[in-house]
Length: 425
Image (tube, rainbow, N blue to C red; front, side, top):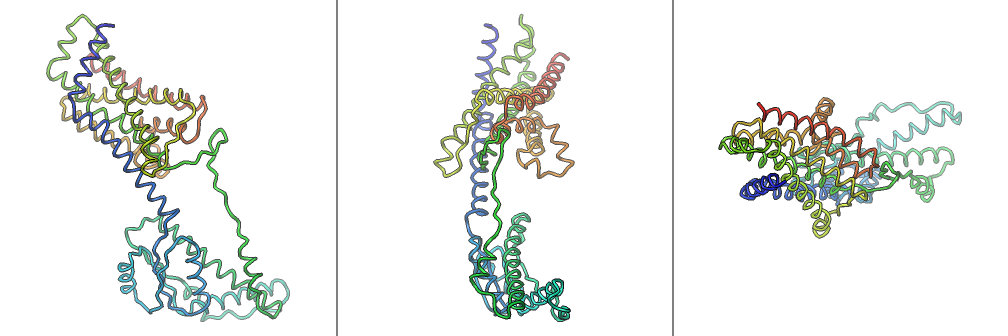
């Protein structure tokens, strides 16, 4: 025990001298966790709370075009900047630049007339199918469907998913106007008088609403947020980045001959590796504690969502220890195989970033191409993140914790075996 304690003290002194390694293990992950969470929270606010500037070039003076503009204003998602000028595309681009609008909508002339004619044709066909009329009115060839198409302009920097959600909102507003026109045409044909405004409002306002309920495995309703996703992810990133310190220290001992001298002492070389693992296990658990406390106390002060700690603290501690052991095993494996500190730092840092990318830290697993989803299984970060997410997002039970812990144990044991084999050779 005395030999182990002496070796641990030696490793602690070496670690404290490594200022760059300590900054990479603590400062960088903390900055990334705060920065990424703040950016994602602001993006969610843009989508859910903030209004988007929308430049509308309305070339039609009809009622349907006016209703569309009013509907977009009432939706609560847009700051509508209206213009009735007959602008071309270059002028619309200039107006978008002047108004800081990333999107623009152009309503063509005779849009309202085309909508009205199309609604009359549909209502006539419907009445014919009902047997109320003998035959439907002839289709007006001049009323080409493509003529009533809207023109949606967007800035090239706008992401596809964001653009499609905006298009969906505009399309829903157009559909509502078309539905009103068809209802009005049917009512007028049947009753020979206009559709009362209160009845039209009552019919169109009865829309089905969808209640979004996040459901965990135990039936609880835990609402996920950017903090719940990012804190576990960047905590793992911090753990695995100890490769820059542990791997470098192992190489330094090999190159300087310290490890050779240590092996001449009356002690087993496994004791030396064990002392390093205990030292860096404490470092990893300190990383977990620091980053979790930041999410718990600092994030609410910064206006970010607070981290919700899982109720099963023992399971959280067990998963944290296993993830830390996996990160230590990987760093130790890199350090034993590297021939120089440059190799350990270069390969270690690059490999951690690659494993984080394919493991779901940088990009969500479900958003990856299918081939990369299979590749994620070889990343130890994928299994560690899955175990953390089961606790933070799904309130997993013990059998879920053990099931997700088994791959972490197997990967860590394999890395330890490779490291020991390398040390013996």
